Each structure stands twice: as structure tokens, then as C-alpha cells.
Length: 122
Image (cartoon, rainbow, N blue to C red):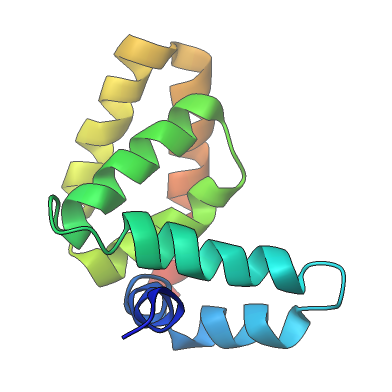
């Protein structure tokens, strides 16, 4: 299996078919090469490595995105449902963000998490 094919398989497993289908449909000539690169190198490269399971990679990604206050945090909080990360574990991850990256970053991450988990309840 190619890096791209494996990447697409993992990307779909983590982010879900609906998200990947929307992202694929939204590609233009401007970002097609970038999207293909992400699929092959991020999903098919790093996420496909055998050293960590998808749940571990998911928790690390949530912590990093929370610490850096990146917009992709919401995407990966939604994806946590697919990787087996519980709401309780999200709380623990974001408490670590508060200690090691600062309260403002964690405050923002908790706000995003609350929005994500409230939308999942409806």
C-alpha cells in the first residue's frame, strides 16, 4: 500500500469519512498538492508509524494544538470520538496544557472542547 493510500485510510479512520469527503470535494488547484502531501506524509507517514497507537497520537495532537491555540483543535477533538479518547481524558490533557503551556491556552482549549461536546449532545 502506498503512503498516500495508507494515509487516506488512517485519515478516514481518525477524522471520519464525512470530513475527508468534504475536504476532498473542497480541494482546488491551489491546495491540491498540499492536501495530497498532508495525506501522504502526515497521515501515511507519521500517523501510520508503528510506535504509537492512534489514541496516543490523538492525545498528543490535542495537547499540542491546545497549547499552540490552533484552529485544528476542534477537528481533533471531534476526531477523539473515533480514536477512543474519552471526555475525562480530554479534561486531563487540557489540565496538562494549563500547567505546561499556560492558563490562557487551556482556557481557550476548554472553550473549544465544550462547544464540540455540546454540539455532539444535540
